[in-house]
Amino acid sequence: MKSVFSQRQLLHTPSKELSDGEMRPAVELPARAEYVRDRILEVGLGEIVEPSTFGRAPLERVHTTDYLDFMDGFHAMHEAAGRSGEAFPFCWPTKGLRCDVTPRHIDGLLGRYSFDAGTPIGPMSWEAAKISADTALTAARMIAEGAPVAFALCRPPGHHAMTDRFGGYCFLNNAAIAAQYLRDQGAERVTILDVDYHHGNGTQQIFYERGDVQFLSLHADPAEEYPYFLGYADEIGEGEGEGANYNWPMPLGTDWAGWGASLDEACKRAASFGTDTLVVSLGLDPFERDPISKFKLKSDDFTRIGARIRKLGLPTLFVMEGGYAIDALGVNCVNVLTGFEGA
Ligand code: FKS
Ligand code: ZN
Image 1 (cartoon, protein in one colour):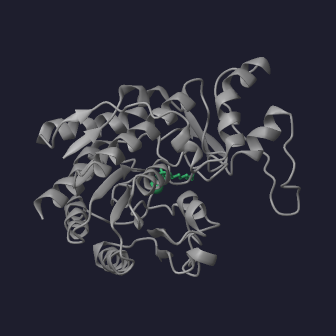
Image 2 (cartoon, protein in one colour):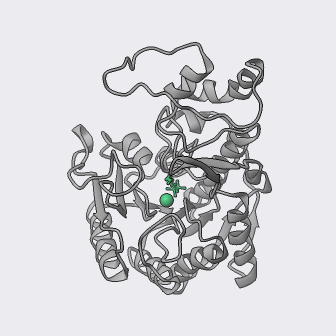
């Protein structure tokens, strides 16, 4: 299968994040993508092509104009405020504060357009995020043009990004942008299957009232794990979207026995929806040695994930999300893809 990747996605270089009351070294590092790229070359998975530039239109199908304007202008605003280095939001319009105002101050705007402090913005972060979205779109175009499968080596990741908020290492929701693009190119019923360890709150929010794009997510119970405030089993969609959103929150410590059973249920939902195109938000952080996660999947289990997804018999776009066990990331990611091809 073909993969899509650009070196320019490495321009986002977060140095630190607020964790357990301290600034700790960031984990969503450029090297993640390099390990995956190197493994693709090592096993000869297929050609790696450069992303094309799709411009703003496909981003506006998912994100709001004011959010995109804010992000486009952010770096200049940051410099004009006499600041340098990475920007971190710290004050948010939560319930009880006004959510209908847009402050002028840079810290007010940072709070307005984010939902956590986990996503530092450096000088090149937005550029890298736009290229990451182009990577997803380029791979989606391959599917739209008839390829049975394609891999978007996205980084920075996307599934936490909401219509108008960044967070959780994500700026643009690559999988959502790709799913909407596929709809616009003629797919009728798209399912996004999110296997990242963390709930894809952004993707869920974007499609929550949509009956044409189903969202299915397997993740750690948000009562115990980030993002804490979304991803519970009773979130089943609203309006037209009712019955097109399902969550499989699982206890910390879940291994293949429990995880694989949930995957089976999710795959049944994908089939019964009448899905014609599948997008997989491919997080590699359910891995047993992941430094920030608490599931217990082994490297061979990732091969099983690919094989199970293949049984759906659908055109499938894989979009990379998280995964932080850097030395095993290439093997685990490519195991999913070879598991798909070999099944
Ligand atoms: C610090 C907890 C902060 C943030 C976790 C973000 C996970 C990101 C991800 C993505 F796919 F988006 F990259 N945790 N003690 O893996 O879901
Ligand atoms: Zn994750």
